[in-house]
Image (cartoon, rainbow, N blue to C red; front, side):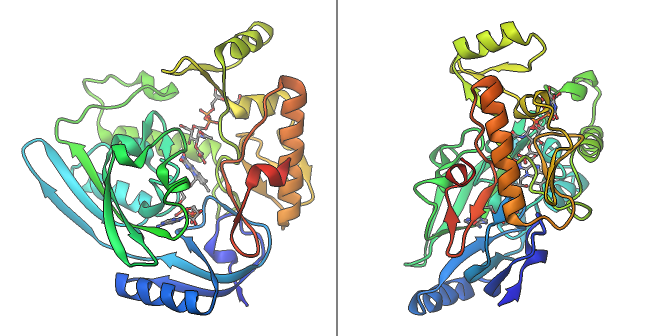
Length: 341
Ligand code: FAD
Ligand code: EPU
């Protein structure tokens, strides 16, 4: 068994039977066939920034290390074809250096480019779907590669077809991004709204996003974490309105379909849980939606704390939080919500 602490950002001590860096498609096909012959479980991992290993993994980890960026353009758009193992934040920086704009709001999100479509990464008013042209996927049993356009990916809030129909036996190998030359800044989020849309530069937005993130979100190199542990819950408007009557300060985001998104971090903070610790796992002081590996937390500490948070929020608000983080058991992914219920 091999130590895999360095391959995931929660830094929980755990092992896997084998770890293979995938750097070419031929190698991917061969390794997949070999693992199938040996009846070995396989887990595809980018940077491991949205994962909680509950146990040692009794199988092989495929690290996505397919790299390369190709740039083409026409009068209206820049087109980037990016291999899935590229680091997302490095791509954002590269695009700015090359005067290609539109990714700046998504600065500093950890992880690989090939993982970005899976939960349709989003921050500060922009989601992956807003810049996505297509996603290339390999069906691993047949080795066949096919392309889904942006609509076919069925993107939603932290949602896509890659969590459902194309979840098992598929690997995202590359993505296509389409970025308008006629760049328009996205200034919907909090402190970004202070910028003048006529004069602001993409670099200024990048700098501001990096600065907000560095104050709120913990650096995984200092304290292990996987970003927001829970998703922001969406509830029916009548339920949100009742809560808003009782708690007028509650953040309330009306959605296009008439439902309302609540801020899980606010709900958790209202339960008095900032800084709350079980074993080595703690609720982050600056952002209650983040669980920290503060002092050699075990996966059980993290699960127990997540259970306590979910119960506390349910008792106070009658809203049940669902994990955003993916839970991995001995042989593969397990149901995260059931694990903390
Ligand atoms: P991993 O954690 O390695 O994998 C995630 C899942 O995708 C796993 O189920 C894995 O098996 C599967 N997978 C990975 N690669 C492939 C592939 N090529 N093909 C098929 N399946 C694959 N997310 C946001 O949306 N917005 C944020 O603002 C944000 N901020 C964060 C801040 C911090 C400090 C941290 C630690 C995380 C944050 N996240 C955020 C979550 C995380 O960055 C994203 O989910 C990211 O896309 C995960 O990428 P990864 O390469 O680490 O994926
Ligand atoms: N809030 C609190 N207390 C807290 C945390 C938040 O009151 O401890 C309040 C804030 O004051 C604000 C609201 O909750 O009114 C929303 O907070 P914030 O803007 O910090 O964003 P978030 O909803 O907590 C989401 C994403 C982040 C993304 C940010 C910025 C989810 C689950 N999380 O967090 O994504 O970076 O918005 O757009 O949607 C991730 O997915 O891992 C992640 C970090």
